[in-house]
Image (cartoon, rainbow, N blue to C red; front, side):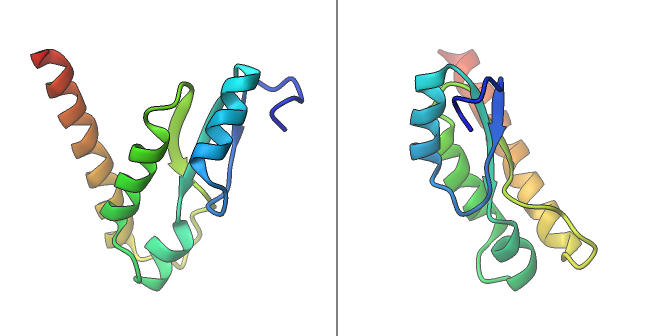
Length: 103
């Protein structure tokens, strides 16, 4: 996919961000993903905030990374878990902005 001529690629929740990030860097493209939708929003075996942090820690240092879901949002999700994941993402963005402005 990375060599197809696309400007960016979206990845699913099973792909490793660091490996995809290296491929994207080699081809000069962006990449989007990979919040674990199935575990975070359905099974309640993982906290949304923890997976948001994983995504941002693994992908955030790579050029072209865009935080996103690694799968579709369907009608059977737990809305409070999605809200928790979104809140964690927004909080991390706020902290990054404060760090950047204080340097």
